[in-house]
Length: 371
Image (tube, rainbow, N blue to C red; front, side, top):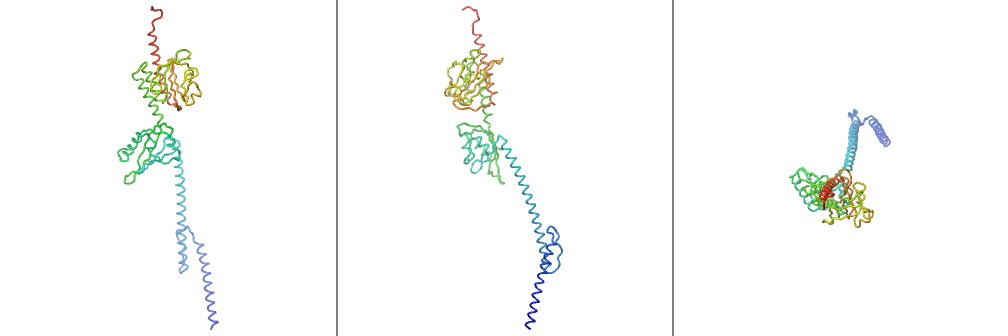
């Protein structure tokens, strides 16, 4: 009986092992037949193996779908990154190519974020801490800009649009044209202002010079005209000394000052020799002469002066009648865009010099007249 029972047990275990081996073989065959990219599963037979086949096929199909979706997402992301990179490159190129800079202001803190272009305009270090408009602008101009901003945030204007003066680290100033608009939440509450800044210093300088010409040309003549023109010339250029002079001889070796402005007031006219002065080059070369710095080093006679600008004055035949000149105790920037305006100054001065010379001739008694 014991042997018979043992034989039955051995036969049962052997049969179970054969069944497991056969099941593994059938499973491998089923997996080999499944197409993971097929939307319709391979038909399964009944029983436990059939159910296993159904589950495996469904899992393969689901995995294939997930793989396809993931591949599509990766492709879409690569395309988005490529487009974003191209967009950022175009934006960066536009900023580098434009003269405008970008500014952003947080409405809650009033702190500013300035682009490198704006920081360069203002002479600010690239790593300077956050600033605000009050730190940057002249007091009155900062108040005017902040008032414009408040009006815009209260929806009383379409945008911020104002010109103002910025203080420079070196003590100078730049004129800025500031424009911007508010970004708002869905509830219309503003949270940020973003806009552009343009350096309009050159334009403002030209406007000031033109204004000076208009004031000097309007009604004045004779000595009054010369006094007005040198005063305006000095104020526009920020010069310590400015004068208008006529040549006393031909070829010119000496000039007579007709009006002079120095240190904030008029001074008595005087004559001086041209040799050793920058005025000699202006008259000799018949062109606008600019010495931006080291004037005393180049012309030792000009003690205490750092810069010079001279504008020749011509008669209708192109001969030099005299010149306008200004001297500064600080360096100056060469401004070729102002040269046509300086020439207008000089042309008007030339007409007045000719008128003056004509009056002097008329006042002289005729040759041979009895005394």
